[in-house]
Length: 281
Image (cartoon, rainbow, N blue to C red; front, side, top):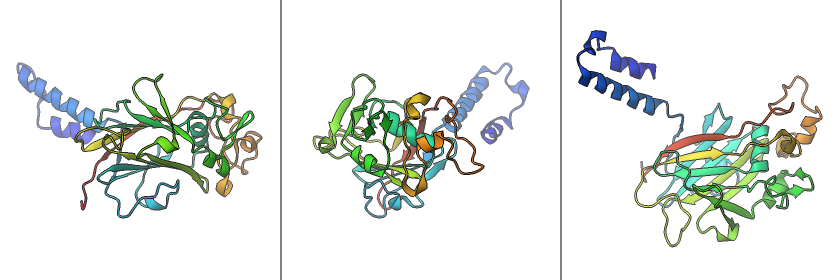
């Protein structure tokens, strides 16, 4: 960003602005454009056309070398597309983020305008704290070990700009959407396949008409510590459950994670952006 501003400003002398309103307006417009393009805050994803078929199975094997790590969020995101579908992979080994997703659900927003607008989205899981009767809830605790993660694959919600108007669908009603979440070692892997364009065959899709990029938003709700403290984390590959961690069963010298000592959990709320690929590019 400093380089962009420096490039614009370097050939200009301060006294050039005075008495030349047109020049001043032009420079300010260039600066505004530079700031908007360089400081949008969206994670830029590599994108691309799949080399082979992507199987939506909650496993990361199809995404080796095809994800981008976001240090601020401690997640890895991948996106690919073919002529009909956008494929997304979301991976996190952060145990607090995993608990948030299971407890409150993960909302994935898909905006073909690139303006980060929340007009079409998918929430999965529903969030066992929102609905403790859902499969995976065990009494007062939220079970997210591998068998219970499998049992969450019964329903999801289609989201729009009205937070009170959610359409809940069974997996049998998805019509083109495929989704799977699973554990792999200490990681939680979420894969999504969603139609690019709405049609009679695919009523739940990203957009209509032609578009060349998609903004992808990831959002969880704020979870109170007392709610999160009742949740287990995935145990595949040795990931400790919340109950064990809360009792102090951490490896020697390990630093307590945020939220362990009654802190509020920071929700996910960030955007990524991918340019849609064309075949053979």
